Image (cartoon, rainbow, N blue to C red):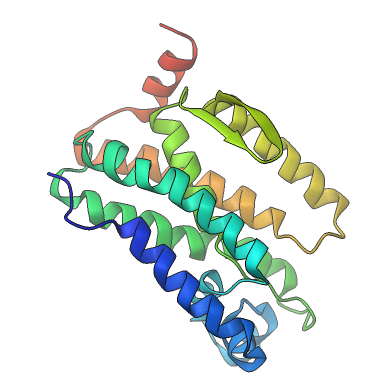
Length: 216
């Protein structure tokens, strides 16, 4: 049975409200964003979650929320709920995917930048990547198009291109975008989906993914 509300929509609304508030309040933004040195020195572990609800500007917010709406609603309703992979726990598993995606995607940057007080990060892109790649694992040929890819391509091809670009841009640096968090979020989304589906319904996501991609 479908949930009577959209978790994706609730996440988007809450994120927009908090982000709008932070746009005009630098102190609030600094209190919520991901600041590895503050986490390390002051044990402000809440930042592993709150950073995903603040964004740098309207374009940053709009891109992340549009991506989440486009993929999240489909993953939530059709891949997590109607597929019966998680039964009555579908809503809980979707929330865990998003929340844990925020936390896990920030961990590499924490260890890398915990001694650099100047480094700060914000935005939900790590969790959004977790949702997108969970969808790709469950439906690898789902047509996907993004701003930098003008045509619709199968999800698994998009995934390869996305990871390759993120690795390249991450090594190049200089653009103030957390490409490491994108990669971490994507990997988490893949692993979460494989492990959760096996635990709840004994469904082999990896085998299904390979069979679909190889047209078996």
